[in-house]
Length: 141
Image (cartoon, rainbow, N blue to C red):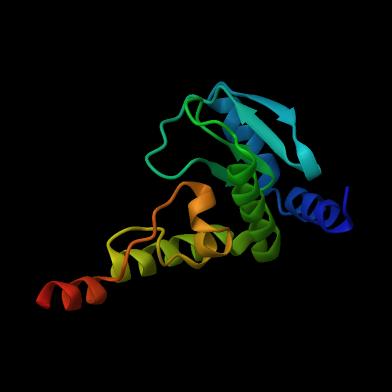
């Protein structure tokens, strides 16, 4: 395992986000298996997802049963695991602020969300929408 992946694993263990992700999976009746690069893959999680391909909490990647964990989706979710480590305990409030900013700009929570953009939107199953002002300008022409 690369040193950067080991560091991510340790930081997410110390900030308790991976433990929180594992607890969430277990509470929801899921199972956990070791994944690549220190990641943990959750399966059989009883949770409906209304967005993207999955959710990452610390180093735990949770993907609904009906969506295959492709190399692109794994790469996208691994980027979120790194973001958890970089932001430590501030990840969730910063992520939701980025969702709010994106919604204000585009009408969806992900197109202008810096975390989703840096994780590569399309790899996560998102479609980039233009901003509201761009749509208004185009509708006038």
